[in-house]
Image (cartoon, rainbow, N blue to C red):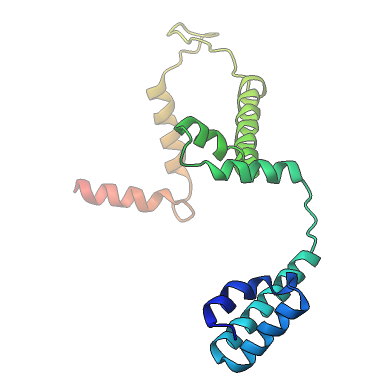
Length: 168
């Protein structure tokens, strides 16, 4: 008769055993409930392993996957520079940085070529064709024309009435 310790050691090798050894194990787990539960667990685990062997996942880029696994193994032993370079191995980060860089390049090209500034002309107080440029004169003329418009249609009337009331 087999004891429970021997059964627990041999149950994992059930498939590799001869028929006589299997019959000894079968007699024991038929009598012992604890070993019977262990045998059920081993059979269930073997069935799951068999299903996993049958499953053959398709890897699109096995070299990249192998590289990522190898990179993840020694993460603690890496220098800070290696950790930064590993961060850039992520496609999202890589393409995001590329997109930002391309946008900045396009913006600077647009700024350099697309916008042309007119030449700056300096105005002197010398009269042009007999007309002297005077900002105060221009603003006074503009205000007079504005005040001469109909005060009902003007948005300026509210501001004008507020200023006159404040002065009083």
